[in-house]
Amino acid sequence: MFESKYAVPRNIDKLISKLKITTDSHNSYIKFLKKYNVIAFDEDVFDYSIDCQGESLPLEVMFGFSKKRDREDVIANNWMYLNRIPKRSIAIASLNFGDLLCLYPNGKVYHWDHEVNDLYFDMTVRNGYLEQNLDLKLVANSFDEFLTKIIKTEIEDFDPNVPYSDDYIDFLMNDSKYFFMSSKKIIQVRLKKLELSEKGRELIAKFKREGLIR
Image 1 (spheres, helix red, strand yellow):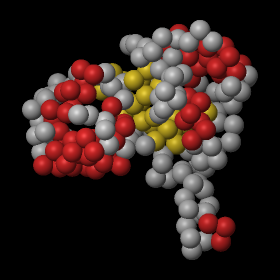
Image 2 (tube, rainbow, N blue to C red; image 1 turned 90 degrees about the vertical axis):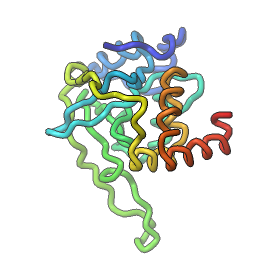
Image 3 (cartoon, rainbow, N blue to C red; image 1 turned 135 degrees about the vertical axis):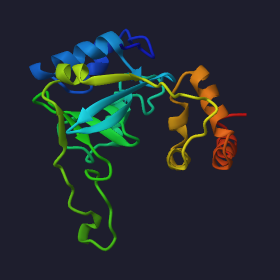
């Protein structure tokens, strides 16, 4: 099911040590990193999702080690979400357009919902922050169980001639780089789909202004 986006780094053990994960409950995750590194669920004919208490959540990227230190990199992501995800947990994947999967010290995997569990700043509140909701939803009791719960579904009605929804384009307007976390082949298909709507063409113009495409 899995295909690595990048080769596993030669210094993988040194990189993993930076995550400071030493408990036996993390062994399966460590083995996964050593075998696959980054996994991008960006195929154009299959969807990958995970069930979380009856809700199907689309998977995006299983973090690993990327030379770009971008949103595919597990170290960069955990630095970016420091103090925003529960202490001692590790962000291991992105999903559902802005959410994360977090691996806890006990080996369990939880869903961090950015609309529910993020740390929100509010100028009307003393000290500036609202009380954070740390009640994350359980996805799996172990990393191995999480892997078995990944659902691969063929997109029967995938059509490059059908435009993206306005909601999806609005999301991309706020996170342009997310659009390009795919293979060149898939990016070309996605650009053609953007050309099919006025809002999509506005996004293409934005990509050009940002120097992401010519």
